[in-house]
Image 1 (cartoon, rainbow, N blue to C red):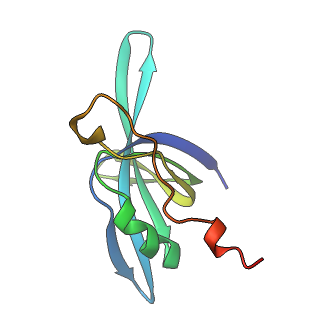
Image 2: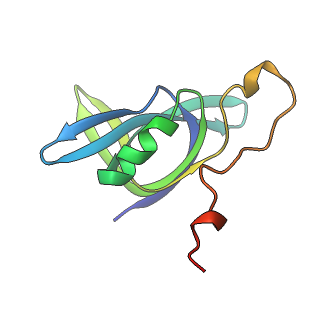
Length: 119
């Protein structure tokens, strides 16, 4: 297994697809790679399987900063190599765009953990 962690921006809204008996949430992440004065962008196709993917799909939106960790994959098609990540962990970094304001508002958690604790 080849573990990788990447941080970048989502290139389009996540899509939920049916794959056999399971569902998979697919999205792409653009990661800037700078070497000296040169800048290139790497694109990773990401997939989250099952209920986790289904619950995260509405929150993964185009332009949103995101960090993902998981198993590095690659495939070739017509002489091009495509990189991918079978995602184990996701961190949503905040909202995309900032709502037209220069001031960044702190992001709110998706749900209140204190209200779910049974004791």
